[in-house]
Length: 288
Length: 266
Image (tube, rainbow over all chains, first blue to last red; front, side, top):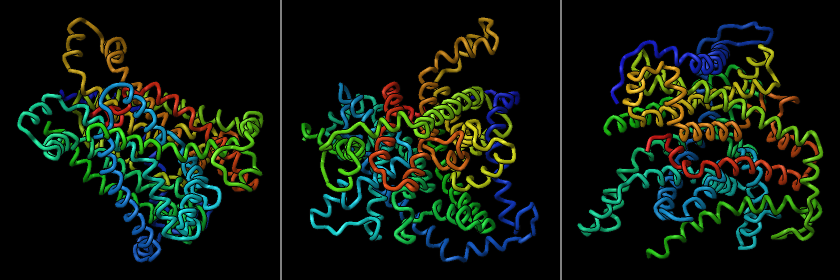
């Protein structure tokens, strides 16, 4: 759409700008304050320069939680995106099956995150949980509160349970927008199922898949509540992802300087990755 | 091959329903049954857990608090986002692209980064432990989302609609409320659904900004789990009840939900 230039449009944006600035800029300035200074309370601050940043960048604890975070995000993207596409492809395209699938599949998305954690905790308990009990009955030595591998397995399974539907719904919306004429043409040409998928369906889904990857990346990168309730970051620090580690540092140990520096680095990484996705997305939109 | 297609979604839905079933199953059991035996369905069916929640004010006020701030947030977010989304979809103005990206960065900001400064900030303006505080803080991620989705829906409306209305002598606001808003009701419905959803499921900020008076149900649950021992049945019942509002709103938007998740961009 060609847009007209109109500087008065700013008046329309003012309410949004004020509300978001109120919430984003003032608190962010507090974080910046703590990141460069040392405080002993009572609003007394001493300039520390980049000391906290150096401390965080060199700390093994930060490297470890950042590593765990990237590993977790990559694993869940690697599972959820292909699985979501596969489910969307096999979903019914018309009839009563459609609303039934949509409503049931959306259920996990609307459950409060700590309830998701609590639900999976109950579900995975080795003695009284269905998952834990069944795995142990099958001869696996499963206990997610004790063993690192099991804790990771449960956390990933929980996230797949919680968020794969988002990818399914997005892919499904993309598939629904394909005109039947494309499929008919493919049939006349005798295209294989694989060719239909790679040449017609995948390109049409490109836009929604970019949104899916963007949303899944940023939400999994700030995951806090679900693993916190499920494993509490344990056993040890095995599932302490960035947010969990940050809250532990800021509110648990009250190391405000390093925590603030870590917040800024954390935010910066998220921004950088999202900027790349956003640019890609806008370029896609420009092409159409 | 064609016939066997329904197997994949069916298995997936069973996988989705299993933990929910287990939660429901637990909520109808007595504490002794939960602790002493492993049963696939309740042997001594009881509604005691639900009764506790509906009669104990610390429990049911949690629900009321949550619904109160979620609705407040939804109204504020959509009301503020409507004119802004219109501006982004129709006009070019100084810094529009940067502003749009800046808004999105707030949707991307990890709440953990903001928890402590929010606590200090809302305490200093005397809003700590009020519904308004939670509703306003959730604007941080809901307003950008609302602007994003509405902008997608609005851009799909041809610009000729605006121009014809002006030719017919409509003033801007009359056009906006009488013609434009009715044409994008589906988009507004979806946006409200998303604001409701993300405010309903968020806990970290809601918990940080409240103590007693505005405590959300989700926070009541975590505190019960840690303080009064191991009341799994009660916890399961409270959890099961938090699924209901979501299930109701999904039912209303089921036909648009896929489009909404694509942020109006399909």
